[in-house]
Length: 285
Length: 156
View (cartoon, rainbow over the protein chains, first blue to last red):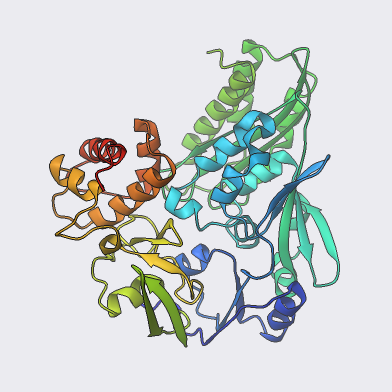
């Protein structure tokens, strides 16, 4: 079954500049290929050229004092197995990654592809939002970092015709920070219908700072800022988790009805929000 | 365009369309043990090992893996000399129609290479992307555990 009938040529550039030169000359008819999953599952008949990113040296996970730096062609498996991720935020980011899709697909999905393609409602993007990750983009000369919100506020299509996502920087957080995420999915390999991800700084039982992201397919993931305001400065107690459940149910934006009703999505999102907070309390139920 | 693979240890060169997926290239060239079904990475029937890691060949661009080592189910054992996983799948009744079996066994093979003593959860998690509509999954889990025991005893 030849889904990509119009593809006539493949390039494997040796540098980011070379890749961008090919991309710019393609008149929007070239696709950058990290793992290639999205391209084969959602084929675009406009595409006539593939630009394989394998030789750009973007498969790495490194760390310095401030960041974990992940190259764009690193797969979810690469990232989940990297030494730097094992204890990052108590290992909860690694757990979130290994719950995504199946091993077969995690071996193919790249972090760069997850960011640059259009499915930014699901799994990785909500987690990156909550983690306040920086998306590193190169035009061949300069590398610029965008927070996830800013990246998707750009004219993404235009940006991706002249630039390449080269990596992601994850801020290293001290022990006062906790991360949690939950996903609702019909089966192991499907794209999640609903994600909730949360990063919270908790000192002496008080939520000092928090970022919450919700991804609800097919709408774009977003920062649940009302929820953040609700929690910030509050003492983390079981009562607060219950209040937050009700608040989330009433205020979370779950986009459209798609395979799940709006009411059901709100219900699930509120339970996830509560459960993540309970996990932050040490799994008290 | 031309691509070159090592398939089950033998060098092969194929003419392909630039937009083709690996599954189609393999089946067109006689590797019918690689099953095609969903073309979306959902069912796992088309699983092959590429440089030792399991992938769904229906979502892998053939041109992208030019130069790679590809292993199909026939690369790990034969009818005359089956791999312990193949023996265990038969012994435990984890095979019925056989359509999902090549993919499932290859994923289990990759698991046991890295984790010779997997827990039930390890096995379940690893086989998550391989759907079976005949036997269910209990027999598969038992088969993987049996194969792990056989491999420990050196039965390969």
